[in-house]
Length: 112
Figure 1 (cartoon, rainbow, N blue to C red):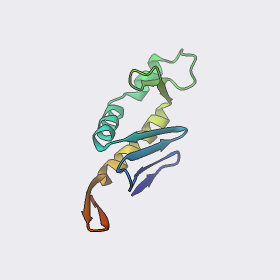
Figure 2: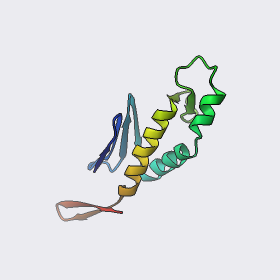
Figure 3: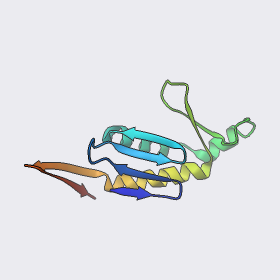
């Protein structure tokens, strides 16, 4: 399964069952619960508000999202945030899967 927007894609790896997100020059590799948490976290960010609060920042992109305790931040414009949210929400609908192994065959079933 793969979902694509102009700047990104989300897909599930058949080998490791990880959910991979590529957005612009960023890559995230999540379990289902990590993916759900990340999508939920992004859905709660008020991009327009953060752009106003950080309007005087030297960064071109005004939405600054810390990624854990690593000292690494994801910088987005509001348009990029909206696109990333759309990518994750589109994918979330189709991401409910069940992997069934019968003998040498592996079946991935997607539930809406």
